[in-house]
Picture (spheres, rainbow, N blue to C red):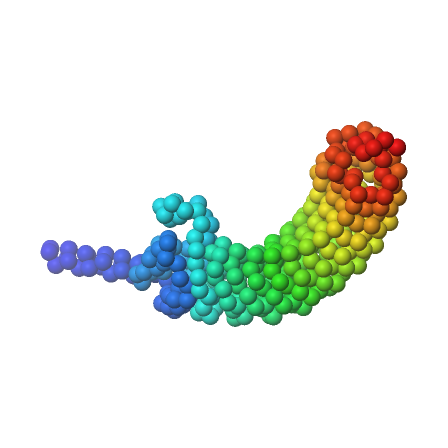
Length: 368
């Protein structure tokens, strides 16, 4: 009787052991994570203290595994978080130094790599990341990463989020960038990226946000951008872009924010922008000339319409009063002339919105 009980207990222990092994992470994944950790240095939060034991799928901070394959799928380490680990240390912001080890490329099922807002991570983006076929999220924002965007980044056919904002990335946007046809969110703001926006940029048909401000981009805006029918936010401000504004931008179905300020864009304001769905339109600090289109109407709804610091001439269109809404309007620092129209929205604007033109007059400026 006792013997039967012993064998039954042994069978249960063996079963539990097998179940435990089946839930453990792969030894090669664990080794890759430890090599990845070895080039990173963080001492305030002690988050890497949790990276111990044989099962990297269990309670390793920021590590998640696929429930079916038990392979490491996500590395999510953010330097700014409301996580209890941060609250316990009485901070909402961490600090980490070091580089990204090539060992991260030995995680064949990795779908997300987030090392954002640590302020001091540096070095290049490992080119071998483009060999990870399941990578969907690459978020390295808010650090000091340098070097170029990996030349073969177009191989990442599943990549949906690419956030490299506020680093020291240089070089050009790779020519194969248009191959990232699954991309929905692109943020390259605050780097030193130069050269032109690739002509095939419009191939990114799934893109909803394209944020490329505060770089060193040159050349003209590719007309193909207007083919991105899901795009709602386009920010190309504070670069050195030249040439005209593609008229197709005003025909995009969901584009709501268009920031082109702080470039060297020339030519006229496309008439398509006036009756579009764009509600934030910032064209300030460029070399745009010609007249302000006199085509405002019920479809015109602008929370921000900033045309300041350009070479606009002629009169302020009276049809602006026919717009459904105009909040902030700034036409200062141009070559406009004539009487400022009466009524809304002009009756609630400051004189600074009209200052430094050739011969504007009327309220809130001096009488005509």
